[in-house]
Length: 117
View (cartoon, rainbow, N blue to C red):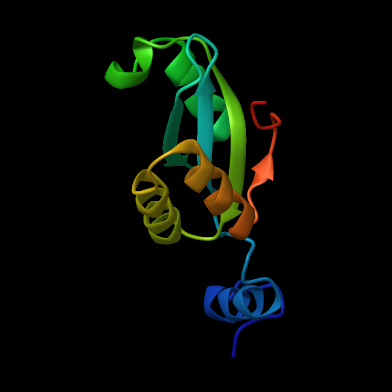
């Protein structure tokens, strides 16, 4: 028998996973950024939204470097990268800003910048 001070990682792990399953879960974002230069949208997914937008604005992404500066237009948080990638793919298949705006609305994205007039 172990002393009361002994550490039992199996019991601790089991208790932690039962009490707070989201403790170790990472949050992922699907985002829409808009080019201030010409108003075009770019869609992506990441686990660190601020860092990713800074990455785009620093010119590290080949496609987005041509259209700097970018601002966050809308985003959605999801539980897994797989879900984020699925939503990103669906967004990239939307043709035209009206369809994109409809997609953002029905999928409950948080709008940061209002739609263009």
